[in-house]
Length: 277
Image (cartoon, rainbow, N blue to C red; front, side, top):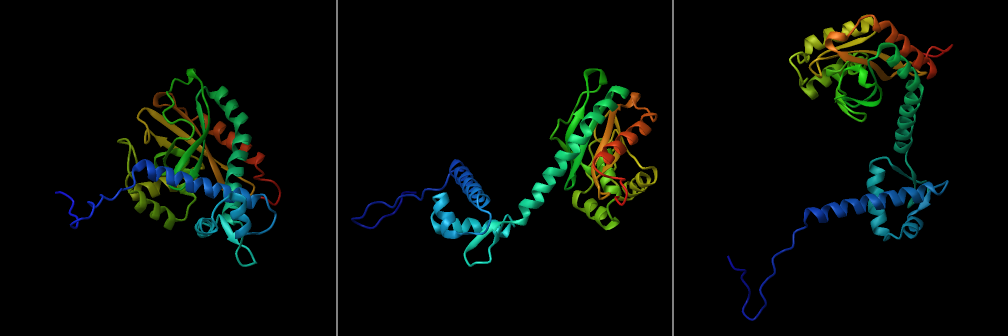
């Protein structure tokens, strides 16, 4: 249908809608401005005024104010005591401590993992919890393990489908476990996956009782895993150490060695010291 116009006037132009590329460029620009503001705040030991932040980052004060307000809402930035001033927020400290803890456990675990791999010839995994999933942060393996590595470092999987994930769930309160069950629906990957809440809760009780967890082809067909918990100086579980092997090759004789290795890593993190854990 042609665009209507008044007599003697030019036709009305069709509105220009933002394209996907335009939206992406805008999002990237906002992130860059946020990072510039964080860098400007990090360069000063105390609160910084909006005027100074705008000058340092070459942003218009209204733009800087809008972005800072969003970062305050996310706790990445806090308001200073003086009106119109800002400082770095506590959320950054929380994230920094999380990164530090993950780096620390990886450093402490790397050589013991390699030793366990040399003794068993099987793949050894280190994973941490991230919400409703575990994330693989390190692995020791070789071609002679006889098993293709399906999930690379940085890969993730649902807690209830993995031996390490079950360790974390087993030490959650029952209300948190049931919240997880409702939230995830206990989706399965194989015919062995545990998808029934009552069965999962029985499995978690066994994990608490025996001190280690199993994955019986619940994540990948033909692969079984056993896992033991790694704890920090507060006694909290910070990672899972798991050993994966082809189903026909898995041996219960490896459980004690796996637990001893997890205990060695935990000790390096301060667990078990007098007055600790």
